[in-house]
Length: 423
Image (cartoon, rainbow, N blue to C red; front, side, top):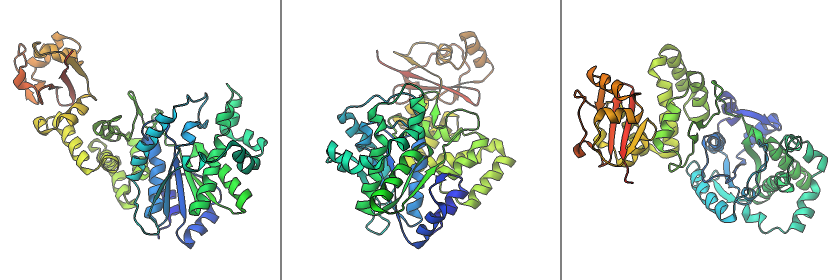
């Protein structure tokens, strides 16, 4: 059994623990049961959730038993942590649908064998729905001093602004009760979460100590940040989702491929299972050969494989190469090509008939038709990776890929697209 805390410390992902020495002792004595919870606040987990999910996965690989909890109950309430305003409540039908989607995503990262480290997946609605309001107040609520609840950062920050409803104020009690239930049902003695969850998680530690006279553990992961000051897991188009219907595998791959040199080694530690020696080699490559972007490629390939699988990785790598003239565009399937073109300047037109130079301008690759003509005359214009030498050329149906796509390129690195879209 590997020393998981040493591993997490080297990867620089630990933000807080309740008692690191006591936790290390418990981990050394044999397998423990550890859980992490994921609320259905959207139809998919996102790149930020992935950091916590991978810590849970690392615990299983180190010989411990993981529980993935999806918040079928807490998702109906809303966590005030990290928010300055009240969440909009979703219907029970919407939350149930999101729970089922997120369960599938969590399942992909854990092993559910019959051995002592086999994973379990639960929803906290299973026990919360059965509890009456009176039982909740008498059996759980009585263990929560109001002064301590008010002092928690997620609560105190809101009290100084627009305030906090009783619904969200109660969230920490519900999450604490989850830990108590998992301790009773599965012997769970460690809860994981993001650093913004520290108050909610330690509320569960306190509850178990008060009710069961047992000391259990908490560990939170660091908030992932980017060196350029932009928010991790976000693009101009929004969050980086794990669901391929919300963020295409191509866009997902490109997000990691475009990691800043200042971030890529840290991301390799957090989001991949590469060894210290492998990451040290990639770190040296960043310093010695930054233009080669070896570390970024390794990061993008590893994370895309983890989330979407090796076959999807092959498709997106082929698309990435083909767009820049290093492979066959015709060999790409329509979904992958469409996803790739969605990430570059593009135009949607109802039908063919416009000259190539007009399409270059419409796509946004050039600022005007006159500039497009100049690019053609200078030999820097391409249609489906074939050079266009005639500035009067009009693309025909034979040029369309999958009957609806044209791939445009200006020089070696500027790619755009055109899609035929029926009105």
